[in-house]
Amino acid sequence: MTNISKKLLPKSVEDRIEKKFVKSIISLKTFPSGEKFLSEFLSPTEQVMLSKRLMIIFLLSQNISQYKIKNLLKVSSSTVRQIAIRSEQGLYKDVSKFCKSRSNRKQLLFDLEIIVRAGMPEIGKGRWKWLDELYEK
Image 1 (cartoon, one colour):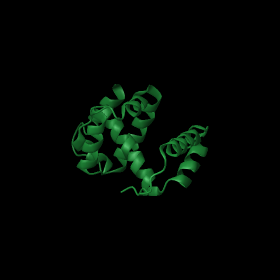
Image 2: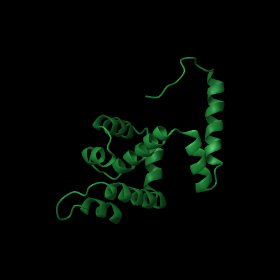
Image 3: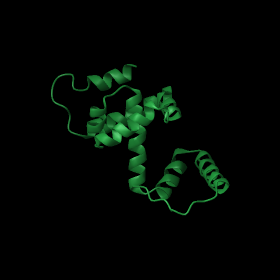
Image 4: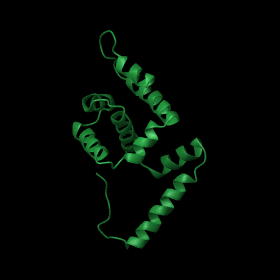
C-alpha cells in the first residue's frame, strides 16, 4: 500500500512538484541514466509493482485473459481486475497507446518471453501458441 502524507499541499505546489518530476524523467536521455535514476529513486518493491502494472496493461491491450495474466505475472486476480476496469474506463489510454507502438510492443514481447520462459513451461503441444500469436500481430 502506498503511503501518502495526510497533510495536503496547496494545489499549485502539488502541480509544480508533479511537473518537476515529469521533467526529471523526460530529461533522462539514455537507458543507463534512466535505469540508475529509477533504481535510486524507487524501492525494489516499487520497481516491480510498476513493471508488472505496465506488463498487465500491455497484455490486456493484446486481449490476453485476466486468468493467464494473473498466472504469468504472479499477481492477484483483484490486481488484474482493477487494472482491467481502469483500462476499460480509459484511464490507461496513453499507456496502452505506448504499449501498442511498434518498437515498444516488440520490446515488451521480448520481455514477456523472458518472463514466461523463466517459469515452468506449460505442458503439451502448442504450449507457446498464444505467445507466438502475439508476435504475429
